[in-house]
Amino acid sequence: MNSTYAIAIRDFSKRYGSFEAVSNLTLEVEPGSICGLLGPNGSGKTTTFKCLIGLARATAGTMEVEGAPVQPQTFETLAYLPERSALYEWMTVADHLEFNRRSYRSYDPKRAEELVDLFRLERKKKVGKLSKGQHTAVALVLAFSFRPRILVLDEPASGLDPVFQRVVLDLIIEAASTGSTVLFSSHQIGQVERAADRVAILKNGKLIVDGTVDTLKGSEKIVEAIFDQTVPEVDGLAADPRVRRIERSGRILRAYVKEDSDGIARRLNEFSPKNVSILDLNLEDIFITAVGGEIPTVGGDGA
Amino acid sequence: MTYPQILRLRKTLTIYGSIIGGLFLIALMIAHSPHAASDLSDASKRKLIAIPLSALLFSAAWGAIIYATAISRSLNREYDGVEMVWTKPIARERLALSYILLDFAAIVVAFIAAAALCVLLIASLGLLTHISVDNRTVPTLVIGLGAAFMWYGLMQGLTAGQRFRGGVITGVSWAAAFVFISLAEATQGGIEPLHTIFTILNVVNPLAYFSSYSLSGYGAHPSPVLPQAIAGTEMRMLMTWSLGLIGCAAAIAGWKRLEA
Image (cartoon, rainbow over the protein chains, first blue to last red):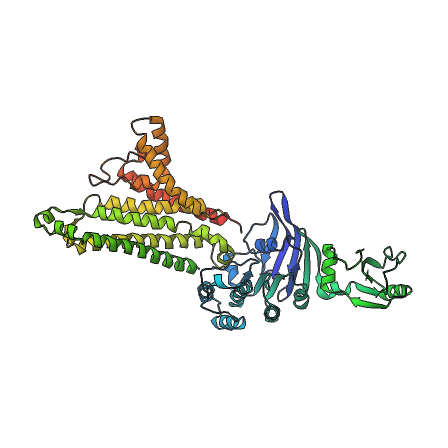
């Protein structure tokens, strides 16, 4: 390996005609780490994955896995789980395992059997008769059955119930603990928050947030005030340089504060709220703020 | 890496085997019907029966051609699950070539199976010794299998680089094959410019190379539905295999360029 990064995407752009799906993306993932790629639908996550592993061609930029562009032999150590099911509907679960056994030198039959049991899959059942979640489970079994060093997982928990979502999370964390590198996307932000060391957020094909989960969460606090009646006008709060934005929802006012959250809390206390609390930012807050999503408000206007 | 294709071919060969097996049983019943049996029981008539091997191979080649078109879009078919096959440790072009070689082996099996049933039918009538290797045996074998391979290759070439399902193209190719031959025959000795156009169109029509078999002399006369330059037997043998190879090469190139 002639690179310190397990996955290195540099100045990557992908264009479909006049539409730029991904623009000038640079993302470097360190070996043994878990990187969560977040973004609304159509933000370019799947396109990035496809170009990274050579299913599509990048318009510009370079993409490397363990220091080199993806070659056929890279797939001996790289597992990819696509967003949509790419399984053969007419083949059984056992047939898919046999396909993997014949394809990878490092295929681990014992591990595959453990995973089949873990996801409670029926070996003789045709894939076409499985539910969406079971499709995902089969794809996960295939991805983890040859102990890859790099895992690129596009929506790895799609369609799974909460119990199996947790199983997927554990598999990802376990893989990283044994030295594998995981790059995955998910709409379930809680999962990403729990598993990922690092988070990148894409919006309209551009990287808008990139950092470790702890750094991102520590960058702001939320001062939340709950009032008996409607939220009063707090003069100058929105213009306060310590406040990045405020959000009103019914009787609740939330201020996203970059610094001096205690000072902002004291200021809100002057308006006699029922309660004022200082909350840590979670990844969902970071995501919503970053992508600029408008949250439907309950009984009031968002600010 | 070709495991799904092996399973797929096993399945299609089973279906093909059931169909030609069914046809064989029907032919067997007809051949052993009282009327046919009384004809064959006449020793003087039996002496006159001569069965050229080329005729049996010609019949078997139809089976191979039909089977070849049925499996001719194996690469296009993989597009539905391309994330699965293109993320295996094998180069795309090598994988495509493996598919083509496997398919070709299956086409040969289909040809041999059909030929074997033809021979078995003759044997059931006690006429096995009446089968003779004639001077049209080799051309029939080469052009018959060549036409199957050519059709297969052209369909692969047309569909492998496409994102859409190519089943319609295969279906239309059968209709076009018969229409072009019919039009070339219909305009022969009549509207010469039109005849020329249709014979040129028939250059890429596998049936035009294959269908001119007659007991009076397959290959003895140039095919009337092809341009003169390639109507002779040797050229037809060369053209079928060459066009098949060109189609396969185009398929591999198209599959390599394709994006998921």
